[in-house]
Structure formats: structure tokens, C-alpha cells
Length: 201
Image (cartoon, rainbow, N blue to C red; front, side):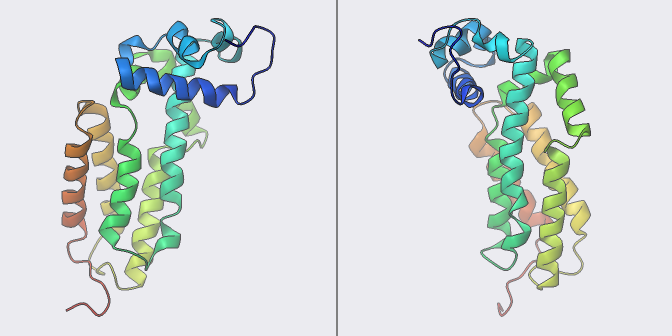
């Protein structure tokens, strides 16, 4: 165990990784400061020397995962013309749905954590809005290439996709990731059902 007063390299990421393991193994109810620091092999007070409270830690963990999911979506416009449109969108959906629903639910039910997440998103931290913008930009690029039909309202399609991801993440059971992914893939086919690959019959 790391002693007090000694700087720990990559501590933030270490605590986040430890929290993810606790969540996966025991669920959101087990996510306490003690559980996280014990899992990380740190002194019990370390979390609170770097985060004002458990609420702040939970909020920052949520923001950390949304940043990673948004990073996947940011690459979408550059991928226009490559692969299948549906598969590219499904990859973004998978990144969002990989967030632990229990963690998101925990953040929502802890007012201080929820407020911190909202304030961070309003200040420009990557979240649902960033993912929606990236998906819309990608669909417009594919539309320009003729791989998404001109009749498709890409802004509405992006909103529908991200809204569905939000719904599934906030209301779906923790063990339903595969089912949620299948629902999203059906939605994508419905939204861009007129999509086509140039040269396809």
C-alpha cells in the first residue's frame, strides 16, 4: 500500500480504474472512498486529498468515461467513406453503452455529483452534446459522399441516436449491454435505412 505523503504517479487514473473494478464486481452501492482506495492499494485518505468529496469523485469518474466515449465519436467525420455507416455508428454507441449504468445512476441520485456533471458539460466538457455534434457531422459527410440518402435529416437522426443512448444508459439494467446494443443497431438501420454504398445495386 502506498504511504501517506508520497506522490503517486497517475493517481487519478489509478483511482478511476480501481473504482471501475469495484463497480464491475460489487455494483454502485459498494462504491465508497474506502473501497476505492483499498482496491487501488492506497492509504484510506488519499481519495479525499485529491477530491473534495466522494460526490466530486463520482462526478469526475463519469466525466472521465464520457470524455473517452466522446473521443471515439470525434473520429467519426474523418472516417466518412470507410467501412459501413451502420457499423461506424454502432461503434460510437458501444463506447457510450460501455459506461456502467450503476455509476451513471449513482451520479444522478447524488445532487452534488449531478450538479458537478451538469456544470462541467455546460462549460464544454465532452458529453452527450459533443457526441451528437460528431454524429451529425459524420452523417453529413457521408451524405456528401452519397452513402447516406439526401432525404435523411441528419440532425434529427443524430439527436434520435444520442437520445436513445441516453435513455438506455439511464434506464437500462446493468446486465443488458448486449440487448441495448442490439436496440441501437435496429434504430440505426431505421434512421439511415436509405443509406447505400456507392456502386451497390
